Length: 213
Image (cartoon, rainbow, N blue to C red; front, side, top):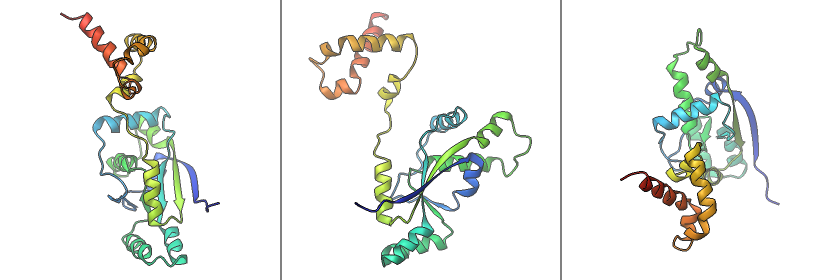
């Protein structure tokens, strides 16, 4: 059996997270993750999710000091050089999960300029809300890349995916028709199109056509 990688899961409030894992000490490697790509809607959505306690996925970080120890033990000179350079630059963690949430939370914290007195109730609730952090220890640089790959294997939702979870009478009506007529649509749609809810789109088009000139 392969050696399991040691990880520590902790629950910490938003303010505590930023003070322990700031962007000043967290390294965002372009070779591990994409650049910061969140739009305004993503930021607002994540803030709303925190306030509603809808953030089940942890923020994932790799701890550098333990990675240095691993590189020394295995005489991995290439890793040791990189890790020491990053550590000497003041970095203590490497972001593994994409970094958008870490950057966002740090940005919200910085907006207050250290002034946490007399906050509005919603802002106070936001910074006191508890989130989950998953911290990995003793990873090699190669394992960091592997971890990032595994974490980000899920494909972000497209517009059709988002439409599929909308609530309301019309979406519910469309989904009921989809369940009823999927077999019929499968005669001229590919299995992939059926799987990606193309039937929903066709029924939506038909409804729109039926109610417009």
